[in-house]
Amino acid sequence: MAGRAWLRGRLQPIEVGVGEGGRIVAVKKSVTGERRRDLGDAVLMPSATDLHVHFRDPGGPDEVEDFASGTRQAALGGVGLVADMPNTRPLMDRLSRLESKVARTRGRLAVDAALLASAQRAGRIPILAAGSAGFKLYLSPSTNVEATPDETELGPILESVARSGLSLTVHAEDPALFSELDPATTSAGWDAHRPARAEAAAITRLVAAVPAGLRLDVAHVTTVDALRAVVQAGHASEATAHHLLLAASSSTDARRKVNPPLRPEVERAKLWEAFRAGEIPFLASDHAPHSAAAKDQPYALAPSGMPGVETTVPLLLARVRQSELAFATLQAAACDRPARWLGQPEGRLAVGHDANFLVVDFRKRRRLHARDLHAPCGWTAFEGWEAIFPREHYLRGERIVEGGEYVGRPIGRLVRPEYVDRALVPSSPGSERR
Ligand SMILES: [Zn+2]
Image 1: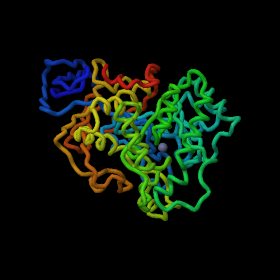
Image 2: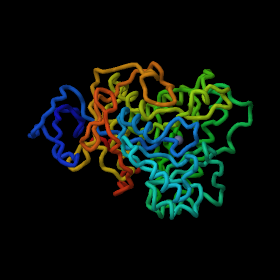
Image 3: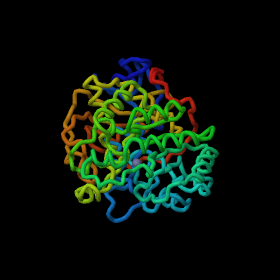
Image 4: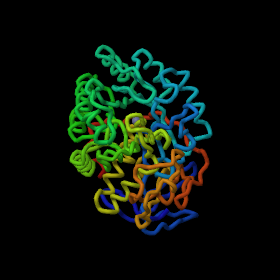
C-alpha cells in the first residue's frame, strides 16, 4: 500500500507492507512485495478506537441497534475497535449475563469490541473482572441504571476496580444538583436542568476518592473546567463530537437531548479549543441511538442520547480538511491513545501490529444525510454537516469497507487488555509526535 501517512511528526509518502495473518510487516519509503497498490495522495490512517458506544445488545424489542448493525456503522465510520457499555437490558452486573452477551457477539462483529461490566456494586467487581475488558460506573441514574453509589459505597467500588487492574469509565454528574424547575423544553433548558456544576461536583467527589493505581476515564466531559479538574489530577477523559461541535440552543428538537447536556456556545468553543490543543486524551462517540418515535415525544419525555459511531471520525476529518484541526491531534485522540487505554497497541501504523487502517481521501467531502447513513434509528443530529468518510477500511489486512460501502465479513473479535500503558495518563499534548 503506497500512500501518505503521519509519521515522526509529519505527513510523508509511505509504503505499508501487509503480511500473512494480517499484520504489518513493513512501514518504509519503499516496500517490495507481490501486489502493490498505489493510493496516490490518499492518507493511510490507523483505524480509530471508540471508547464509548451503546449497542443495546441484549435489549428489548424496541431497541434500534445490535452488535451487527452497530459494528457495521463503526466500520464505515473508520472505527476498528469499540468499547461497549454495560447498561443493556439486562444490566451487565453478573458474570452469567456477561457470558451470554459474549455469546451474542459470535459471528456478528464487523469490527473488534471490548465489553465493559457494571461497577455499580462493589461486591460483584472481582468476579466480573474475569469476563470483562473494563468497568463503567454511573454516578447519576441513566438508561437501565437506577441505583447510584452513596457516600459509603463509592470508596469500596473504586478500590475494587483498582485491584482488578482494569480501567474504570465514569459518568460523572451529581443528581442532587439537578434543578427542580419546570421540565425542559429545549436543549438550553436541559442544560439548566442538569447544569455544569452538577458535573463539576461529581468530578470533585470522584477525584478525591480515587485510590492509587486506579486507571480512571471520565466520560464525555462538557466543559474545560471539568476537563482540567480530571487531567490535572492525573486521569483520562473523553470528549464527544456532539459536545465539541453542538451547543445548547432554543431548539425544541429532542434529537439533541443528551446526558450530560449540550452546553452554551461559549463553553462549547472553549472545549473545542482544548481539543485542538491536544488537551483531551480521547475522542469518543457515546453512540446511544433511540428510535425517531421516542425522540419525537415532548422534550421532557424523550430519552437522552444520539447515534455517533459512524459520524464522529468523518466529522472531525472534515475539520482537518478545513484546517481547523491538526491531523496528528485527531489521530492521537481517535486512534493511538484510546487503543492503548484498552491495552491494544494497534492505534499506530507500526511493524508487528495488526494491519487495521483506513484510506482517507481528503478531496472526497460530502454532506451528512441520515438517508445515506446506516443507523437503524434513521436520523442524525448532524444533518447537512460536512464529513469525510474513509474510502477503505482494513481489519487485519482484510478490506471491510471499499468505496465507502461495507464489504466485510463478521471477522471482529472480542478483546481484553493485553498490556496497559500507564504512561498514557496524564496525556501530554506532544505525545502524538512519537
Ligand atoms: Zn454513554
